[in-house]
Structures are given as structure tokens and as C-alpha cells.
Length: 73
Image (cartoon, rainbow, N blue to C red):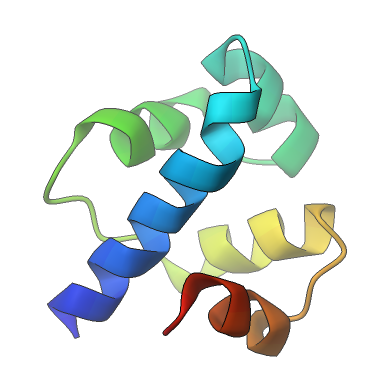
């Protein structure tokens, strides 16, 4: 399970966070706290919650199923 979590976090970080100049804008656009964005970006042990993942997917207009296909999990 840890490997899948890392793939999810790294996908969000490497594919979506890099498009933003700052953490607070990503947080606002996706309905999450800026602290979570910092954890996604900087904490190699961060475990993303299902609630956070759903918020991010909803903000991007994706279902969890579609996200998992994109992230390869």
C-alpha cells in the first residue's frame, strides 16, 4: 500500500504542483489546506488521505477511477 500511496503523492507533486508558482494557489484551487500542499511537496513519508485525494480530484473534474488510471495505481 505504501508504494501506491507514494505513486499518488508523487504524481500530484510532479504533474500538478509543478504548474503552480506557489503552494497557496494550489491549495485554494483544490480546496485543501496549504500545509497539506507542503507535505505533498516536501515530506517523503506523507500518506495522503482519501478525503484530500477526493477534494483534489473533484477540483480537477476527475473521478477517483480516472485519477488512478492517470497515476498508474
